[in-house]
Image (cartoon, rainbow, N blue to C red; front, side):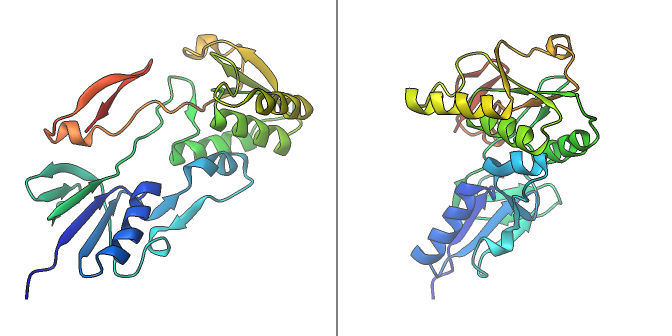
Length: 242
């Protein structure tokens, strides 16, 4: 009998969980290992709800994938020839590897990243401690920034919420959608302003600054010596693509 194919998936986010579920159906005889540093699947698109205290966007990884998938709670530190090295000293052999390591939101000094679950928890505690009249600045005019500003303004109408963006808020959306966003944010009392956030000196006295911009992807492939292409990303970090 032929040996079972060993498949390792690095990353337990949307892509990793989707891959694990599809492979279980397509290759039922394979041994699948999902590697993730946390035992929880985090719905990153709902982290603004965790921050605002209006939702709990975490689900055990074991509930997201079939029982036949082995969930290894550890960080991958290196991809080697036919094996992945983990930070707890283990190694996992593979015949096939799926690289779904994603990335992490990195906020500049003086801000907390909405897209990083630990920082979102910290922001939630700090937000809960703000008194009436305090100012929260959300940096980023994309979907995450819009949703974060709206969620906080709805949950804490006693605060001043500012949405700061380099460009037009909702720039990738249709004109009709942008008009609706402007109306809804205005109804909630969110103040929109154009500009950059480059550290505490540019916070304009805000009591809490939330970074709602994706800024960095995993460099595991590069650190492992795999061929990657360097291309321009955001202003704070290059994007490395395996």
